[in-house]
Image 1 (spheres, rainbow, N blue to C red):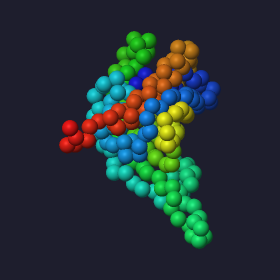
Image 2 (tube, rainbow, N blue to C red):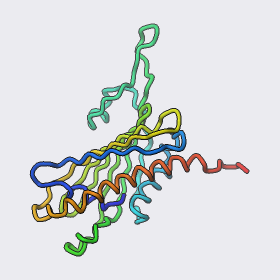
Image 3 (cartoon, rainbow, N blue to C red):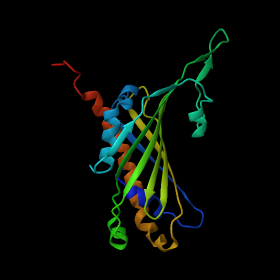
Image 4 (tube, helix red, strand yellow):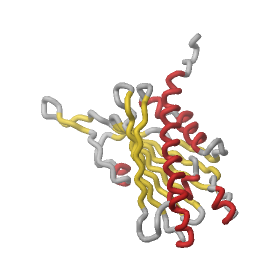
Length: 224
């Protein structure tokens, strides 16, 4: 991740109980994104690596994908997600028509602190990232939690993208960011850093779509 994000996201908020940033952007999708391409371990790793601007990814672990066939599944409850999994067929029987897929990703990387803060604090820290990914119908949901962030303790990012539409077109990406408490003496950075967080989120979306489409252009094993 461009972890300007890690410090920046919260610093662009005031310390008066306002702890939510909402950012929405629309992107042009040049390909039909396939579920299997998004599920790829290598693709997810590359997205994280590029978002860190090539910084080292340590202790990478991506769990096996789980198929979710009930709306009251424990993992959906944990993240307060309300997904339509089942429907009623012509005989009146309840059937699984829209299963969801879930995986957890964990890794460590270094934090790129904005230069203006680096000069003040001397910070060159590392962070721990846990990313929960859900695929359901046309949408990809990501819940990212980052620990060991200097000054603010943690940051949580929730993202929703309609990437699985049946044809190329517009993708709407919504980000919701919450964070730990920040000291009053950093309130001055709000106007400077708000632009950094939105740029970082825009870049994350662009990197994701680029990698999903590139995956489809890779030659298959044994192809000429």
